[in-house]
Each structure stands twice: as structure tokens, then as C-alpha cells.
Length: 257
Ligand code: NAD
Image (cartoon, rainbow, N blue to C red; front, side):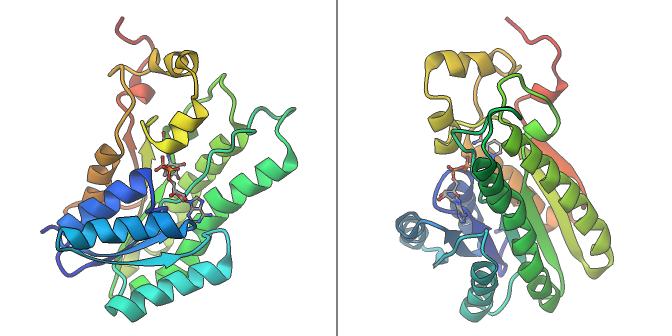
């Protein structure tokens, strides 16, 4: 019960990393506020947690909208009395996201609105709530692509994740003496809806797999375990860090055959 008596708000909780983290946090005793833009997905998560005897509530919100972010944080405090853990995890990877010449402005704007502004707004309204609780842990989902350039272009997405890293670092420094920790989780490529819809052919998958030392995509559950460590008091001396959970990708020049 590593999160006993803690209240955790997780965005993008309806699928992939957010869903697995919601389940994992609940197993460890957290009261979970599951946030997603999709009503149906969120309800499923809450049902899954309650069936296992955990505590969870759903709040439908679009993280790119200030009013929604303000409302989701208020919902967490009204429902469970406090907020201790904020996992800004919702993100999108647009199928039309490509290189500088071909990416349309609306694709760029949407990606930035959800992936960057969404994290900013989560922090804007979440930080005062964490302060009211006496401190807490913020985890922002970035990506390994913030560290490496890829010839398989997705410029808006890559740029957005670089921004999440820079934002997390600065917030960590600003709030370090308020007992509010801010860390970035940087997943490698995962076998979740987000990436598998994007890599919709075997050739596209192989083009990535050859660069992964472990030779496989990661699992959302493996990110949930990393998020659990960052959320729990076990990481009490960690702030401003970039936790890479990437199967060794960023360490590799040549991978095993
Ligand atoms: P996913 O698509 O499986 O789940 C994302 C969830 O976010 C969905 O339930 C979706 O409805 C929700 N969402 C989308 N836009 C939203 C919005 N505006 N407001 C609220 N909720 C919204 O994706 P995932 O793979 O679990 O990705 C989660 C995070 O991890 C994202 O930030 C993504 O960029 C990042 N990431 C994923 C991978 C990967 O390979 N899957 C790798 C590195 C980083």
C-alpha cells in the first residue's frame, strides 16, 4: 500500500498508460480521480477499480481547456478532500504530424494545445491544490523522442515532448522548497492504442523495433510501475528528473541482431 491515504488525479486515464496507472495506483491504496476527454473510457476504468475494491471517480475533461482543468482539480478536492499526486499524462499523436514542410498549422496547434498547454493547465490549477495538501508529486508524461531525432518525422509531437521536459524541470526548481516534486516520465515506444494506430503496418513497426535493444515495444503497465515510484514517497529526493523507461533506446548506437 505505497499510496495509502493519497489522492491521485490522472489525465488520459481511459486508455494506455493512464488506464494502467489508475489501476496500479488504486492497488496501492490511492483514491483515484480518472480524467479523460472520453466519457465512456473513463467510466470503464472507474468500474474496473471499484470491482477490485478500490476507490475511484471519473471526471470528463479536455486538458487543453482551462475551465476543464480548473473543474477537474476542484472535483478531486470536493470528492476526496485533497490532492497529493497529479499525473499529467493525456497526450495525442496526430496521424498527419510530419516534417516542417508538410505538417499543417492546425495539426501543430492541436498537438501543442493538448500535449503542452494541457500539462501547463494541469499544473496551473493542480499546484495550488498540492500546496493546500502540504505538498505532493507531479508527474508529466514526456517521451524518449524528446532526446533523439527520428527520420520517421512527427515534428509537432517531438517538439511538444521537449517542451514538457523543459517545463517540468523549471517547475521542479520553482516549487522545490514547497515539498512539491515535479518529474518527467519518458516512455519508449509502447504497445498502446496511441502508437499502434500510428504504426499501422508491420513495416512501420519493424522500422522502429530495430532500434530497440530489448527488441520489443514496452507495455503500459511498465510505465505505471515507474509512475508509481515517482508518485510514492520512495522517490522523495527526486525532483526535476527525466525518468527514461525506454528499453535501452537512448543508450544504444548499434543494437543486438
Ligand atoms: P492512449 O491514446 O492509449 O491514451 C491517451 C488517453 O488520453 C486516451 O484515453 C484519450 O482519450 C485521452 N485524451 C486525449 N486527448 C485528451 C484531452 N484533450 N483531454 C483529456 N484526455 C485526452 O495513449 P498512451 O500511449 O497511453 O499515451 C499516454 C501519454 O504517453 C501521452 O502523453 C503520450 O504522448 C505519451 N507517450 C506514449 C508513448 C507510446 O508509445 N504509446 C511513448 C511515449 C510517450
